[in-house]
Each structure stands twice: as structure tokens, then as C-alpha cells.
Image 1 (cartoon, rainbow, N blue to C red):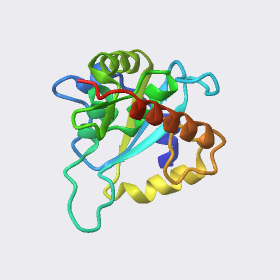
Image 2 (image 1 turned 90 degrees about the horizontal axis):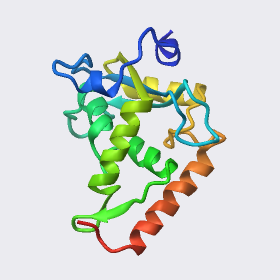
Image 3 (image 1 turned 90 degrees about the vertical axis):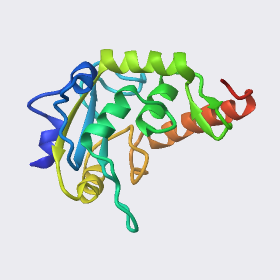
Image 4 (image 1 turned 135 degrees about the horizontal axis):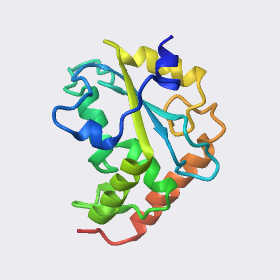
Length: 181
């Protein structure tokens, strides 16, 4: 039942809608799913669930301040250093990852992140379900569904090796380039 709400949701929300104030995304714990009108890579299909995430993540020794609204909005307009989804999408779209700041963080730079935000606004749609302990459902969904953009807990996915390689190559190239402003 919960998987259906993410795989075949009644409604998908655009970046413009989730970034609006007030946002329709609840400030609650849960699982969110990203669908794409255009796939970020030729080996992937469009108009289907490709990635799920949770908010907050499980933390044994402290309480997370994350919730669905914060995470979904960050994925829509943040940067690759704070969003594995943005890192994955940028790498799949062939964007240049760069070291920034002290050189430990990696993003696509101001222009690249703006381009990625626009690509997501044009192509990404999100849905969510509230769940007080979303990490249990996340593990269950990743084991049962074809979610090619998820890496964690997803070694069984056919796209996993390809995605890991693309991300590793992008990180290696970034380490060879000078730190970007």
C-alpha cells in the first residue's frame, strides 16, 4: 500500500510548487519519491519513480532536525555537497563536479547548481508519505522496487555499478582540478 503511494501517486509536485510559501510539503517525518519526465541518463526510463529518500535519517545518538519539507526543498534548490540526489543527477547529466571552499566539499559550482535546479524544475516531480520512522520503510522499498538512482542498500540494482562508476569518475576529475570559488 505505501509503495503504491510512491510508485503510482495520486499527485506529483513540481519544484515550483514545493518551493512556494506556504509549501505543500509537510514539516513531518516520512519517505519521498522522485519521478522524472525526462530521464537523467539514456539507460533509464522516464515518467517513473527512480529515487526515494527519507527525512529524518536514523540517528542513534542524536535527534535530527530534518523533515520532509526541508529535504525536498533542499534537493530542489540546494547543492551536490548536501544532496546525494543532486550529486547523482549532475553526474548523470555530465556536469563538471568541482571542489569548493576548503576543497573538501564538492558541488557543480554556482552556475552548474543553477543549471541543475532548472533541469529539476523542468523534469523532476516529487511525492511523499508521512511515516514516523521512515528508515524501516526505506529499506523495505529499496529491496522490493527498481530504484536505479539509490546507491545505499541497493547493490542488487542493475544500474548500481554504472552509477557508482560515474560518481567516482566525477569525484576523481574534481580532485585533479583546482579548487573553484
